[in-house]
Figure 1 (cartoon, one colour):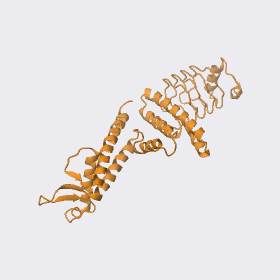
Figure 2 (cartoon, helix red, strand yellow):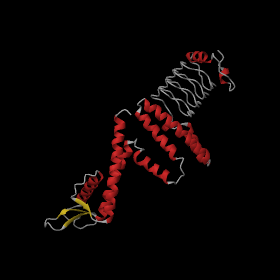
Figure 3 (cartoon, helix red, strand yellow):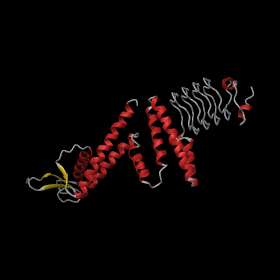
Figure 4 (cartoon, one colour):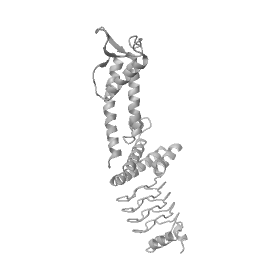
Length: 310
């Protein structure tokens, strides 16, 4: 069978294309660089097919069996993949703009490093060249692709993959803003501190960092803690207070009490036996209480996503 015709950029698929492609794949032929633009390949069997850098623009692949196929570098612009089996498929560096993933089986798909689609990679290259208009256009395309993939994955309760593409969607959206705009800076802070609510490690590190930072700030002015033995003099716990640094109240004890106070404020438990005594401590306490309520809520949601189907 002559397969050279499929490599011709001017090839026009006909009614025999589907059966011929299937036959070539059964013979373990390499189908890379094939031009199958607008081909009707519904229900085609292409398990483990080697189809790198193929032109599959607007190709009808509905109900196709493509388990384990290598489609890396292929053009899938507006391809119809409804109900197709793409499990274990390699989609690295594919153009997925407008691709229909309705009910497509997408478990264990390899999307490329960090799940970046070719459009985002092109945007990064455009930024390096200083072509900001092209970069914004490519980031906008990438955001649209990530959103559609996220929805498809969410429908199949593939929670971890859904989270990855939600993050990529938010990153692509962020990079469409001006470099030092409030929206971009705020979005970056959210990514670093919580991973847009998807990264447990970021959230836990943020909680620990806030607690420790606030603990150190409380130690500058000190906090009041009960009374001394005479029942009258207020005990001050702080780094620069003689009472707290005395013989019976060492530095490690001071740190422990400040850490305890910081955790109590962060968790909004509020026992009340320790109180800030200066303006710095009061401002920090307000910030920590608000941050604690917000980040703990995000942590609970993230834990739910990790343990339950979306």
